[in-house]
Every structure is written in C-alpha cells, then in structure tokens.
Length: 96
Image 1 (cartoon, rainbow, N blue to C red):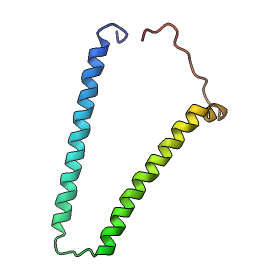
Image 2: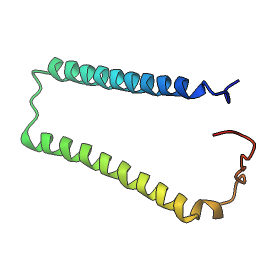
Image 3: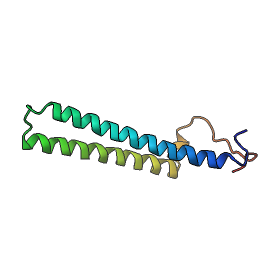
Image 4: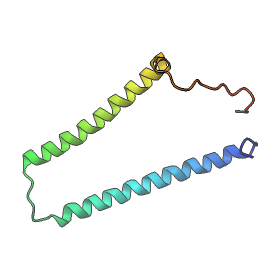
C-alpha cells in the first residue's frame, strides 16, 4: 500500500533517481549538440549568426520563465477557479 509509513524513503530515492536521469539526459543532449556542431566544421557562422543564436536561446528561456510566472500567479489569485472544470477534492482521510 502506498500510504504506509515506508513510502517517504521510496519517494526520496525516486526523486534522486529523477535528478540523476535528468542530468544524464542533459549531458547526452550537450554531447549530441557538440558532435553536430563539430561535424559542421566547414560551415562558417558569422558574428551576427552567433548573436542571433544567443538572443534566441535567451529569449526562449525568458518566455518560458514569464509563462511559468503567469501560471503561478493565475493559480494563486484564483483565476483558474473561474475557468470551471472539475472541482478540487479535499482529501481528509489520507495521511500526509
């Protein structure tokens, strides 16, 4: 049963495993990107291309951050409740 007392150590181990898997996938993605970058050694990218690439990456990260902030603000102020959908179920019988 998941609600038993020994569930919390299991969740801690799975959380650490998730971090390890995310780090491994990130390193693998960087390796693939590096290999693709070096495979195109004959292709020249000028300063404008590098600036455009950096601005695009920064812009994408900024857009993601702003959208996540709007999501949290909307949830905290209750705008999501006005949209309808399923009502929240209060769990009174479940242990923490």
